[in-house]
Amino acid sequence: MKKILIIHTGGTISMKENKQTGTVDREDDQPLQELSAMIPAFVTIEDMVLFQLPSPHIGPEQMLKLGKTIHEKLAAEDFDGIVITHGTDTLEETSYFLDLYLQTRKPVIVTGAMRSSNELGSDGLYNLVTAIRVACCDEAQDKGVLVVMNDEIHTAKNVTKTSTSNVATFQSPQYGPIGITTKSNVFFHHKLTAHESYPIQNIQKNVSLVKAYAGMDGLIFDALRHNKIDGLVVEALGQGNLPPETIDAIKNMINEGIPVLLVSRCYQGVVQSTYAYQGGGRHLKDIGVIFVNGLTGPKARIKLMIALEMTNTPSELAPMFEF
Ligand code: ASP
Image: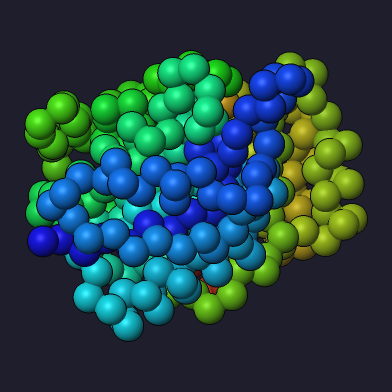
């Protein structure tokens, strides 16, 4: 008999629809606890409500609290795996934070729902039960944090919310899921190449994320530098290029010791220093911009917040972000 801890943090999976207004919101009770009778018979469940927050209300402070709670629970009791319920809007950021922070070989599965507990076609209970089945699976060990939604298993590193409302919203563009679930089985079909983890105590650095656009200038970069941010991630154009009018402002940031990391605003492909023109990738690399591959902007930001708890020296930061 496997023993699984469910930690609820809120989100649509924990909400109900108001049948008069059609709006969806938090309730005093936790609807998934009422439904615990539908949990598979081969598992003992313990559950706790850590937060009852919509996921836009979750930030690094709550992510770290969740991570510390998981460590405490795993140290105190012999759970075989952890399942976390979470709002889908920032689920990918919390999942990736936990993936980088947690030091455990046990399965840690994050799930959510696109439809609240009393809506027609609600996917909450189904996703929760599927997440528990994956958490009970020996093959789910040593895979870092996994996201289980809609019969698919994704890595925290690659998964992203792709649709505002479709239940098939979670996808891993370019990489695909690493497994699927069916009514009776859990199948893993890809192996992970590497996994990293960083035992930080705090997460307090102020890291911003900006998206590049045609005709962008230095205004946003100057404003951020004046506000003394600790680091910046830029979702650049194409292979990693920026309009020339941004360059002086970016140089000023780097000269003031603010690390500037670059990902692409394209959702597939890698950034590389191909173009030598003003603002091209080669030029950006030469002025000290750090290129990041395999991460979206929000995830590069989470990793930079973690990295900055350890160092802000560019020569130490850069290798942490190599592909
Ligand atoms: N806005 C909701 C949230 O992230 C969406 C969801 O949970 O699906 O909390």
